[in-house]
Length: 525
Image (tube, rainbow, N blue to C red; front, top):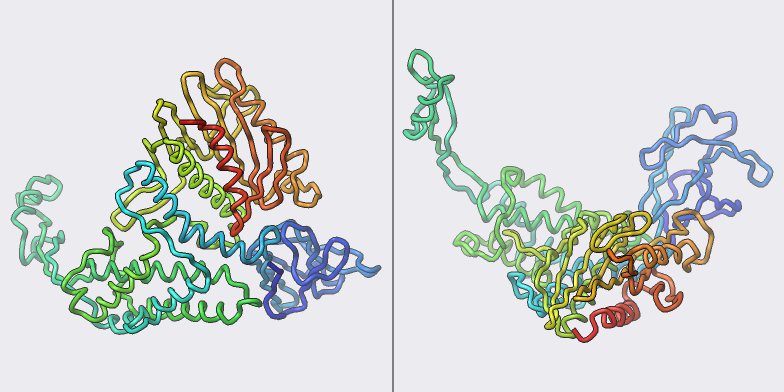
């Protein structure tokens, strides 16, 4: 994916540390921000990057003094430079693109997280014997284009009104019902005292004055819009707005300008009509699945369009990923990449072990709620999935597992070790462990070590540390294999340490290698 910037709106520019002019900084590379100011104005400059104050400095560039900001290493995302100078404000907003994966890979990763992996994991769990409370439908192939088309139907409709038209129509005439509510009022203002409330009023000593209650519970009949039909409408509108924001964040202004403009226009339209439909501010959250049809949903055209539209919108998403980082996917790319790797591993482990005769006896990944079924990877050091073989062996997959010093039954002989994914198989002879560590950025890159993107000694040493430090109570080595999952090429460092090529949209090699490691671990069940 190439680096892109917004149309020039200032004289703020960029250079590499070598002094070469660049359109915008590259991912995870230091550089300089060139400011349109003279050296004599240095003390008058106020500069902020994403709201954080940064001190300007003077450097010699091509033999000439220049006012600059030092640009530290930064990940993908949107950045905003604000420059105050002589009473004027100069701004530059730009985007740093991922350098480790392509635009197509980024898009594929988000589609996997949003559409495919939650459903395929739920199917794998159910096929292996887990009770998850639903029959997930296999996901269709999704692309960014099909997702935009789906959002277009939700917003503007197709053969029936979309959300924009529905919210306009209902803004002045939403579904309402009379509701009998209780309100504590002064006794002299009460019109319909509640008999049951009188008992409570009398029994409260602080509420008595001359033997009479000061305040009583009065019954009032009011109109309410906090009804199932309006909760469904609010849930649909909220979900569509959230998805529009996510898609907009993914789209490239240069390469996908027309599509991004359309998505941003839909988001603006939704925001405007949502403010117009202010009655939704009085509506609570949807507390049940949107599958219950009522007479209002069937008889009122606007609500029928909402009901049918919501069902269609969710048709290919029977399981939803619970992940706030998806709100700003580009800014959270390293974390989301590691989450993507983790979900692919979970999918492969469950399917591979089930193929060897293992069954799921416990899982904490997929959980039903009143509003739908959600997938969440809990990072609390407890098993996300537990499986059992016919012979009684146990498999546990644990995200963010800590191996403390002198821990039992497994621990570290040195410092606490915390791999991202621990897959453990226990039998009468002990526990054998497979460790997988997804990393968008390698440890060596975090430490500023230059390189070509392949693992360096620091990265390999981390895997060796896992292998050598983690042992059972008898002091025996427990780790059979430790591997880094990263976007680069696969490299083996002996029989028990490796780096595995893990690239969204091209994950067949990753799945094949993980499958082989799991097969070696579970054996014949």
